[in-house]
Amino acid sequence: MAADVTIGIVVTLVGIALFAFELIHPGALLFIPGSVLVVAGFLYLFFPTYLLDSAVGPVAIVVAAVVATVVEIFYYRWVAPTHRPLSTTSAGLVGEEAVVLVPIVPDTLKGKVRVRSEVWSARAAVPIPAGARVRVVQGEGVSLMVEPAESPPSA
Image (tube, rainbow, N blue to C red):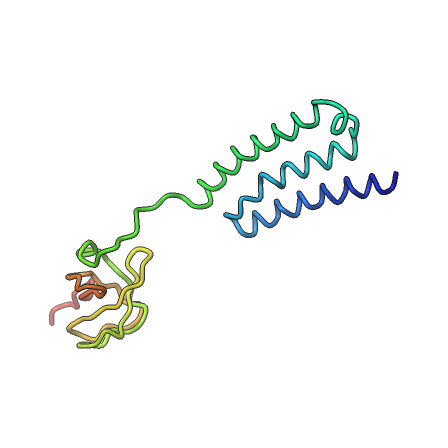
């Protein structure tokens, strides 16, 4: 009898652990097996005859899997909302604003900028410090030509 209770507790705890792992690291698709294990463990602990000797147990497990699937779909839509597709060409970024990650030195490709969610090598005619906002004026292969987004005030 004690072994039966231990099995039910372990199955339920593994299901709860899968829920926790899914919340910590979204995208692992652990809600579905976690739900199945929690329902199976609960039935095994409190209603073992329904789980093992009737159709109620398997139906409950299938229902848990379906509900978990629906919940998981909505959860992923909430956790990872859709965004604009990533750009694959530098020419498609002309006019976009970016943030300088690595200072831009004229006539070199040492500078780096983040445009949307992508990091690109960047050049400019003037030095631009990290953290500055820039505008893409030209795409050149795998690099961008940028200029400061705000013009300095005229003296």
